[in-house]
Length: 215
Ligand code: C5P
View 1 (cartoon, rainbow, N blue to C red):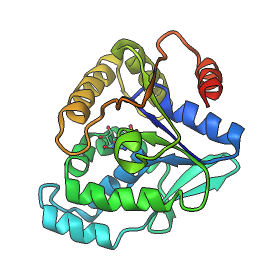
View 2 (cartoon, rainbow, N blue to C red; view 1 turned 45 degrees about the vertical axis):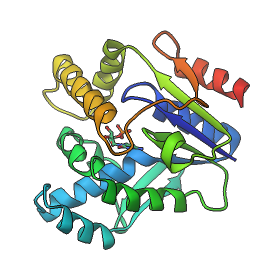
View 3 (tube, rainbow, N blue to C red; view 1 turned 180 degrees about the vertical axis):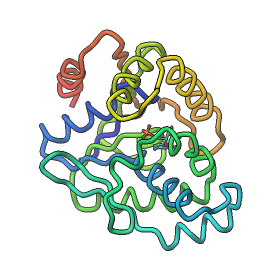
């Protein structure tokens, strides 16, 4: 059984997907973590983000894994835990170089599918219901007003990022929404078989309950 949850940043996908996976005893697959981890690798190696041939080659020798631990799912890049390092604004700002390239997406999607082999899973991202798991049994789309999404992101980032302002977060989110919905390669969009939820006025617990009912 595969359940997919797509939607823009700050729509509550991650919290809801993780809680749902826990409640159902399914594996949690954070597809954004794959884009984040590879972006981090390219930044660390110092590859020109516009050099697709080199990025492709680098991806061939990159291993990204999600490992479950007591405190939640951890992200490993070439065997090292990068769960925190992949969430910085610098990484977020460079992801579009990776996420916009079909050849790179294809390889990352393969790894995401491998992560769910032989198990039931809850996957979340931008294209999990449309591209990664088109045959998923239940597909959800979570959305929320952009100001509310920025507020949620801001509260999260306050804990880790010095000097961050609400306005910065709002601008970054708008830019990312625009890039994620308008890119040619697997844009964020809702398929006909998706169930839509606006989470603006709901707590994550309420969203989880609503999704469980549909499941
Ligand atoms: O979900 P998260 O905010 O971690 O995703 C980071 C970025 O990775 C997104 O803004 C998007 O550009 C890209 N992404 C994607 N496809 C996915 C998941 C994430 O293109 N399935």
